Length: 139
Image (cartoon, rainbow, N blue to C red; front, side):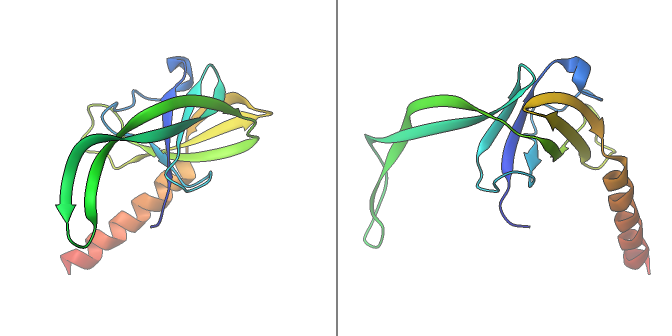
């Protein structure tokens, strides 16, 4: 388990092997694992940065934590990441409740998106694990 990063697939649909469920935010453990947000946009990998500011709106008051104020985004910007290599992404296929999570392999070469494929090795690996768990549970 542990931490991960979000990776938004805002690239041309020609790169996507399936229709991706937009309600599920894709995740990866191939980058910083700091709950950062990355975006694939214009065939580049971008990292979203934000600064926050407190408002006057009180969310809660507590003797232990003190007063907790609501925070809103102060500034937001994106920075290009010159990534070279493969990123493993977990997402869901649109309108398909029957399948497990969709595992994708995203290839960047010198900072440019080359392709996005289904990671068949990972899909087969997790299918085997699921089958074994079902066998154990059925005993």
